[in-house]
Amino acid sequence: GLPARVRIHEVGARDGLQNEKAAVPTEVKAEFIRRLADAGLTTIEATSFVHPKWVPQLADAEELFPLVGELPVELPVLVPNERGLDRALALGARRVAVFASATESFAKANLNRTVDEALGMFEPVVERAKSQGVHVRGYLSMCFGDPWEGPVPIHQVVRVSKSLMDMGCDELSLGDTIGVATPGHVHNLLAELNAQGVPTGAIGVHFHDTYGQALANTLAALQHGVTTVDASAGGLGGCPYAKSATGNLATEDLVWMLQGLGIDTGVDLGRLTATSVWMAAHLDRPSPSRTVRALSHK
Ligand code: HMG
Ligand code: MG
Image (cartoon, rainbow, N blue to C red; front, top):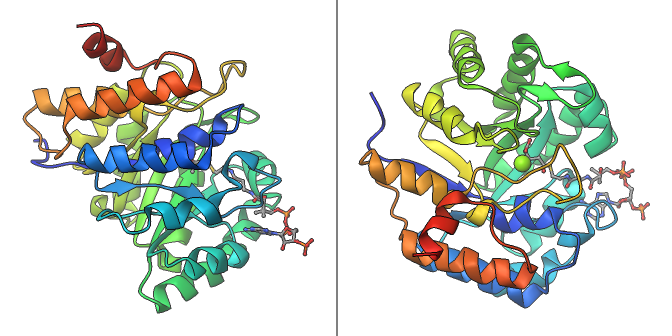
């Protein structure tokens, strides 16, 4: 059976905008987040407290967070290390996310660490966050395939997943960073995680839509009992000039499917689509979401 309700973890303002070539003004980001909240999204990843040289697009985190901090929604932020946690806590963040990799190549490229060094870097972050009652998500990237290493063995994903859970993460988000997963692979990974003691209730899924599989993969995860799904308004994300990096599953495409299945999300699809059309005008290119295109051309 399928779940009665799905919690959408909206990542457009973070995963989407971190990939934009041109800097988006802080006030436009704040307005985007306000509109997403107004459309009924309740968990809106706001930004990252990472090194500004690594992700210049999100270097305005200190300016942005206070502009949206009072909204009546959850506003998780990414923190790679204690420096990032300090910055987030100083602004009153109540939800943080660390982000691990299932592969050595991406750990090096994304965090300048080996997989285990990165886990060591996260340990004090998770411990301190938890001691202050802050909710911690553990992202895990490259759960299916990796651009340098090819297909990623399931046991490698399970090992790092367990480390993140043992560390004290409240939830896990399984990332298909380059969008190569297919539904059978999703099923096999979730089954193995369960067999190794990671409960489905702690698992969220994070699909990028590079090969057009994100919605099919999401349905496979829902059939497995997953109720937390990451998505990005308008399918934001990915650089139009980079081949292996397209955006996340579009939130509108997800909501369209869930509505059809009778699954409650609390999202107003009309308002959400209007938000993505507004954002697309700012970015000067149309949303790649099929649902946004269909609904905005009516
Ligand atoms: P590093 O160069 O190894 O940094 O980068 P370091 O630890 O050696 O520190 C060097 C300097 O940076 C120090 O300053 C630190 O204070 C400073 P100095 O003492 O030399 O003056 N520094 C910081 N400054 C501000 N904020 C911080 C911070 N940390 C150190 N947080 C580091 C290591 C982790 C910092 C770097 O690699 C980094 O910032 N990486 C972030 C990469 C990133 O954000 N990637 C995108 C998010 S992940 C993703 O998108 C995947 C996901 O969507 C899921 C999926 O799709 O799979 C989540
Ligand atoms: Mg991502």
